[in-house]
Image 1 (cartoon, protein in one colour):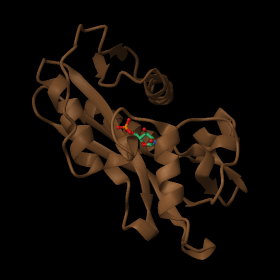
Image 2 (cartoon, protein in one colour):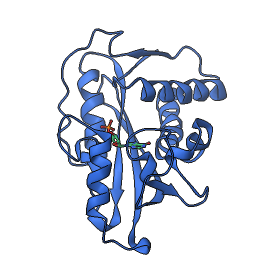
Image 3 (cartoon, rainbow, N blue to C red):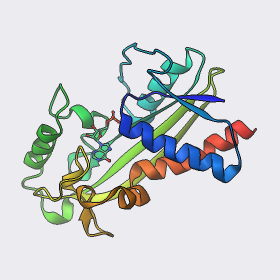
Image 4 (cartoon, rainbow, N blue to C red):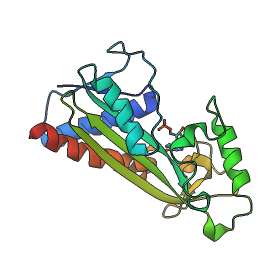
Length: 204
Ligand code: IMP
C-alpha cells in the first residue's frame, strides 16, 4: 500500500514517517510505502481556506486523494486563551505573508504585553487527516497545554517554540531536544492517535 504525505515540510514528513513505520512494526502491518508530493509529481497549489484545523487538514489530504492516492496531511497552530484562540489556523501567517516566525512571535508578544502571568495560558493543536480515494476520511487531534512567556527562552525548534512554556518540564519547546518534544508535543499526540485509527481502517 502506498500513502502520500501531502506536505512539503521535510520536518513533518520525517515525523510522520517515524510514527507510521512504528505503527507498522507494532501491528505487524508490512508493506506501507510512504511517498512525498514530489515523488508523485504533484505541484498544484493547495489553498488552505478552512476555518478549523480539521477542515484544512482534510482540504490538503482530499486534494491529493482526488488523484487516486491514499493521502495524509496535517494542520497545526497555537491557540492563546487571552486572544480568544488566536492565532489558531492563521498561526503560520499571523503577521502577514510571507510567513515569518520572528514577526509572528513579536506580534504575539505585543498583543500579550499587558496580560498577566496567570492569564497567559495557551495550547498547541495538531490535526492529522487521511482521505482515501473512495472518500473515506479519518482525523485525529492532539493538543499540548502551556503558557506564553514574556521573553524568548531557548534556541531550538521553529515557529512559536521559544515563547511556548511547558510547565511539567519547566522548559519551552525551544529548550527541548527532539526526544523530549516528541514525547509530549501536540503533533506526537495527534500522530499516535492517527496511527491507531489508520491501522484500524486499513485492517477492516
Ligand atoms: P501549518 O504548517 O499550516 O500546519 O502551520 C503551522 C504553524 O503553526 C507553524 O508555522 C508555526 O507557526 C505554528 N506551529 C505548529 N506547530 C508548532 C510547533 O511545534 N512549534 C512552534 N510552532 C508551531
